[in-house]
Length: 159
Image (cartoon, rainbow, N blue to C red):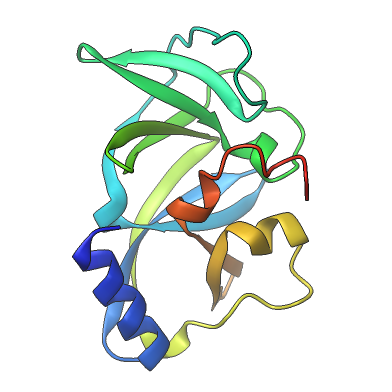
C-alpha cells in the first residue's frame, strides 16, 4: 500500500481534510476507489481465460505489452454477471497490475473526511469485507472499496 493511501486512510479516520475517489458503478450501486490507486481506465477489452484460476479471475488482457489480470468485481461482490461491454479500472496490487472489471466510471469526487463513516453492519457481508467505509451522498451510498481487501483471492465464495 502506498504512503499516500496510508496517509489518506489516517486522515479519513481522523476526519481531517478530504479524499479523492474515482466513482464507479456496478449493478446500479456507486463505489469509490482512491484516485491514488488508479493507473488507467479502459473500455471493453479482449480477455483471455486462464485455466484453473480462482472464479473471480476473469482472465488476462494485454495492456501495451504488459499482461494484466482481469478481476471480476461483480463475482467478488456476489452479483449476477454483467452484459458484455463493461469498463475496467487498472490498479496495482503487490507490484502486479489488475484490471477491475466494472460497469462504468462516473467522476472523481473530492469528499470531506469528516463525512466518512465505517461500513454499517447492515451492509451486505461480502461488500463489508471489501469496504473501508461509506459516504452518504444525495443519491445514496458511496461504498469505498479497499483494493487490498478486494483482491484477496479465494475469499469471494467463502463469504
